[in-house]
Image (cartoon, rainbow, N blue to C red; front, side):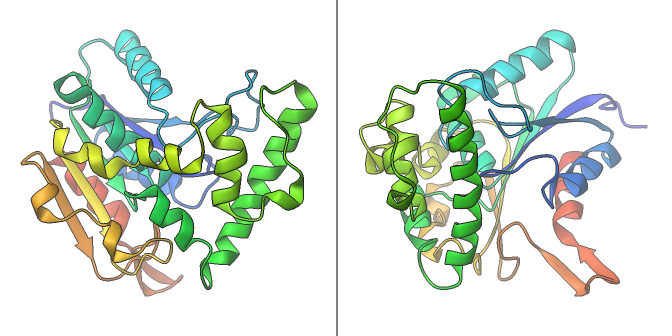
Length: 266
């Protein structure tokens, strides 16, 4: 048995995701098979329990991740910690790694299907078939926001439902003012992870597909932007957190889980 048995692997989900999303089970199993104790981090309000503060979570909120990592290190001193972030969770993870440099508390990290440029990703969701996914996300965001409005008074103007018909509008009218940003553009500009990648010191694997329907190829960091600590695994197919091949579902090949497991073991 490897001497890293008992190390910790923290998994961060995407926008409006949870432990019930389609990808956590495979990633948690990949971590366990790589001799890591798997931990799943729910962002505020995503676990099924309402958040008790007006604020919620967003693509650049690294404070909660820092708190969770400090808590893990305090409970399991001496254990190495690894992290896997998916979509929004990957953006948070990369921003965090760039902010903290050599003080990340992480041994390695993996970021999957990351919206490296939030502005481009936000507008791409309002084009073509991606609108279907955008509507799904908006339904979840609006429902959760309505619950929060019913529970407490918020320090922002409460927009009418018809005002929020895109992710951009939601971020402009809710996410940005609720978390101290001037508007959606200010939020996207300050929280897009691409600008933080050159400062990453932790060994990190980026997994992305050029056919991701929610992002255009222009958001993908160029090789010249990657420091020696960061490796890009760019696949021609895989969609958004997909990477499944074979005779689905009877003989599906879950490539992503295998790739994550191999990197954790290495």
